[in-house]
Image 1 (spheres, rainbow, N blue to C red):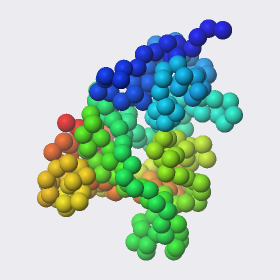
Image 2: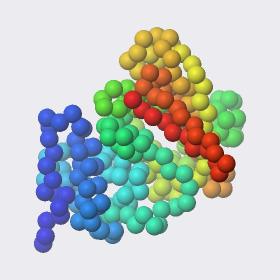
Image 3: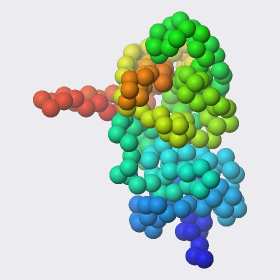
Image 4: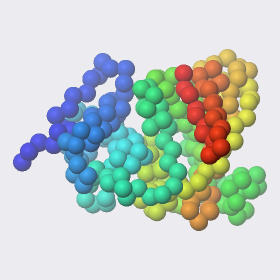
Length: 258
C-alpha cells in the first residue's frame, strides 16, 4: 500500500513555528498541489503521532484549524477527508488562524479560563436568551508570532453543544465542533470602541497599564436568526490598524496586524 505523503513530512523542533502549524502547512501544501485530492483520506491520529513523533493534542489542533478553514472534514467512525470546497455552506466564515496565516505570521491560542455559568440579565439581553440560561464562557489569548495580540472572551449557550469540555476547546476549533451538530455562522454584527487597558488585562497582553486598545464585540447568528455566539475582545492598539474603503458599490473593512 502506498504511503500517504503526509507521513513523509518532516517537523522541526528547532523552528519558531509551533509543531501543529508546521503540520497544517504540510497538509495544505499537499492539498493545494493536488497530491491530495477532494475525498482523499488523511492518516489517522495514531499514524500521524507515530510517524511524525508528535502528540495527539498537536494533531487535533492542526486538524481543527484545517476544519476551520473548510479544507478537511471529519466523518464519525470513518476518518478525516479532504473537503470539497464547492459544498461549503453559505454564510460568513471567520478564522483567526486563517487571518494571521494569510499574513505570513504564526497564530496560536492560550486558554486562560473555561467555565459554565448562568447568564446574567445583560448577557441574556445581548444574546436574546431566556432568563437563567446556562452558557459556556471561555477566555483565550490569541497570539501572533508568539506574542499576545487579543484577549478574547466568548459565550455560547450550553444547549447548542451540551457536552463541551475544557480539553475539547484546547484541542479543536469550536466552530468545527458546531459544524458537526449543524450550526454554522450566517451573519455577524461587529462593533469596535477605543479603550485603555486596566492592569490585569494589560498584563495578559504584555503591555503597560493604560495602553490603548480596541474593544471588539461580535454577535454571530445562524441562518434562522438565532444568536449562538457573543464574543468580546481587547485588541492591542499598537499592533492593529483598522482600514475602511468606501465606494458606490459598498464598503470593505480590513484589519491589518503588525
